[in-house]
Length: 162
Image 1: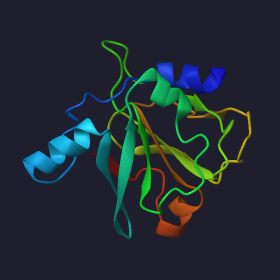
Image 2: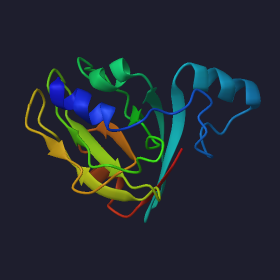
Image 3: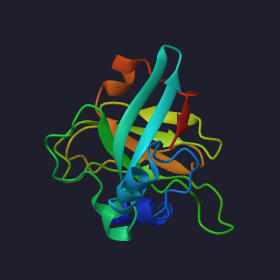
Image 4: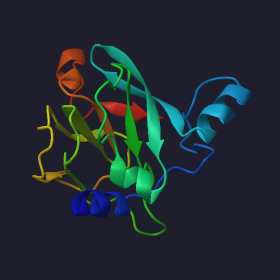
């Protein structure tokens, strides 16, 4: 829990309006409703096309520390986005996640400030307390079902938009 809290504290949550530019591509009312509910559309552009995920946004420190813990039925096109923008003047930071209390295998996608994928930790081990580091400073982290990155052809360097 401590590492997850530290990783979450190292990242800042999205504003409720999803000010990332490509947040939720929808009508105004639907986008506003999704933003209030902590949802966003994330698109990853890979060499074989665009892959769209409907993700929860971990906005509060509590949501960030809990992440996808205890979840067993994560839809294939779902996931969780952690803190897409760095703290005021803080810039991107190295992040480290773990799988404590997480029964589902996940791919953890570390995203640079330029919205390209820095690293993908594929098929993380459920319930493991071993840190999963970003390997370099990142501005956001996306968790999706384990093995999905390889299945969809998502790779380091691919562009991520939300």
